[in-house]
Image 1 (cartoon, each protein chain N blue to C red):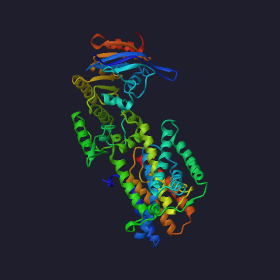
Image 2: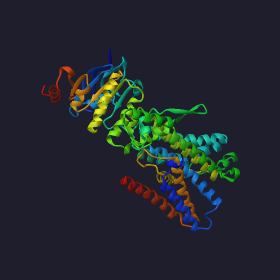
Image 3: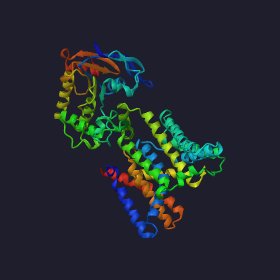
Image 4: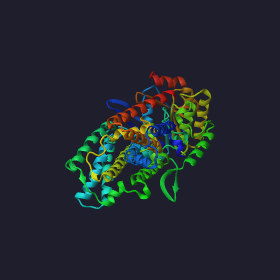
Length: 246
Length: 309
């Protein structure tokens, strides 16, 4: 059974057709590599899945539920997390505020819920999550904008994993990282897979894609031009799909 | 806990101002003058609290002075012309302000008009509505219960000061410690992140502008009670002082950072400055110039600091 089903999805920005009848499916606990040239529509496609953009036509089913009619603010609750290329961190806020952004734990005051944020719990849990990811930060009360690229990436990943997601979408998670940090992220993706979490990985680094993906999809000018099982394709073949030689 | 949220420079400025004024005027350093300063600061301070919420979400509310005038007239109309009692007078002030703010929020979020334009427009609309409601003439003679709000002195402390401090404490915890406050700062910090993380930013912004309007209504209530009149010209140019107080209190003009305790100190700086200049018999024209200059200087210093880090 497919976990995520995208059917006939199109998106126009004004007169520009960014996505053209895209159809694809993702099985539970599998890693999909999504590749394509700049402007092929990868990020737009994923932003439609997470509800940031609404499609012009077509449908998305998550475990047979239609996603396109669910408001953006509710989609995360269904277990879809996205790690954005630009990280989507609030740079002036501290690390734990970023990890729990939008889902801060609250504590009751005299038995009444006043929306008071439980900062202690937030700091404690954040520290644990970051340690579990094998990362190092000076303190969870540190401003996110002052961290290095790799550390910021860790915060973004920590945020995605905190609330046991079912599907994690990663948009160029390794682009800004040092070699050692890249390996760490790839291992993390395989760990997610072994936990039964589906991953969609967008990357320009075909080495990374080939290392962790089960299937590789190629987008070109808004259309899916290839949907290959990794074992049955090669890097050369994928490159020729990307540039349109095949 | 409170100290962490204060920008130290603003405390230095406040201290420096107090020392300078004490040296220059023999009347400055006394408890009764200190209460005077707090009393004079309370209206501006409450407006500045509203501005802090809006500005730290990367918004702007230029209409608070006019909305305050409208709210005061609305309260006076409800009590004197409709003959309802003072409780409805209070409610009328706050609700009138809240409604004006609600419209600001709707126009900013649904119609996607820049906040600068929306609230500049509201500045005119609210002032005009206030003048229309009372035919341009102040409504005098309010009930004693209502007058207590602005003129009462329980235990010798002016009641507006009590209101100001209570409002400041409550709103401080809202901005610093609740989900609502955290999301306000996140929206100002990175709006795209806020949307991506499922925060309903349109609803949140409408609430922020309504809060700013409601607080302007409260300020209007205090002012109306203090002068015993629903005055359609009340709050003229107050937005300048309110926004200045918020900015020197450490609110980031571009959003993402702000605290009510900081704004409280910012408002005190404005209050001490005005009080000191009054005691030194400096013409009020110069005071207006000083406030404007302080706003520009505060933002300038902030820019310099930002470039350093």
